[in-house]
Amino acid sequence: MGASSGWTRSTSSVFYRGTATVTTKAGVYLSRTGAALSRVAIVATKCPTCGSVRVYVNNVAVGTVSLYNAKLQYRAVIALPAFGYRSGTVVVKVTSSGKLVQIDGLGTSRA
Image (cartoon, rainbow, N blue to C red; front, side):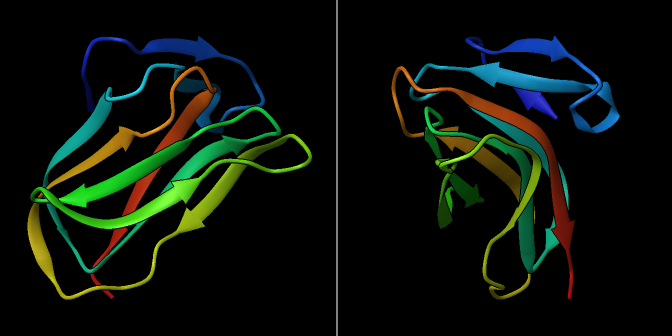
């Protein structure tokens, strides 16, 4: 995945494959080009002080995800509802400011 400026990489065994991409800044984004999908999921940390992201496919919003959870949860898989088949660029954009966003991974499916 590509990343805009404003992200840092964090390493820990609690993350999927040992790393996560982390920010507290609104408007920063991660992107994946060349995706062919009708469903998308993110793997992220959920926590009491975590923020939110909006997911886009080809600049069209397909869902907003709150990463708030009363208890700390690493490697949470958050699947968005299915939509019509599309191909292109998937963007995960931070919508909260000053709140933790830890993205562990991005999954796509054609089903």
